[in-house]
Length: 244
Ligand code: G3P
Ligand code: MG
Image (cartoon, rainbow, N blue to C red; front, side, top):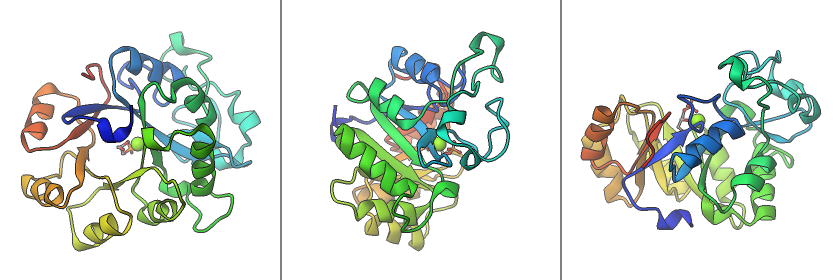
């Protein structure tokens, strides 16, 4: 289903079904899909040999048995790491995925929200994460089923300049201001993605009146989700377990 056919309100599986499975792994994404998610969110980093790897942190310690910065290892090494045991012994051997594997397994099955981590961005780099992402999406023919987001507006701007770029969402961790409004316009954003603990009804009204969707992160309790949807928010990132 193309992103543009997505009906509000909707829930996005934050790092997959991360409440019950090790985040950002194929196991977590599969579980979210089986639970009825319409969109999977995942974080993108770059390996030493410039493969796009699915990992939230800049370093490997928290969610794998590796050490040091993700950009310090080639995919050959990263692909062997255990990204499951930290979450529970039953997930021992669950590996760190790369973007190609995710697209092979989920492309065309479910919408994907790919978040470019700020630390992975190198401005105007011919083999940087923006260029690698654009090439990979083009190869898989998946741009219309993908939403690319980032806290790093310059990364989104660079992507927006590449022909055939996917729809974009600007993540925000501060109240809406003129700088964010300017970036939304400059990147021709599809959505503005604010922090659920900060977003206000006035901001939602303002941003929606300009034609952007609002997707907020992260709310897990049904009562909190109901409060946010009542404000007119289109989508909410959640760790699960309910995605419908
Ligand atoms: O995209 C929503 C959310 O994932 C942004 O924050 O730190 O969980 O990547 P983080
Ligand atoms: Mg994220």
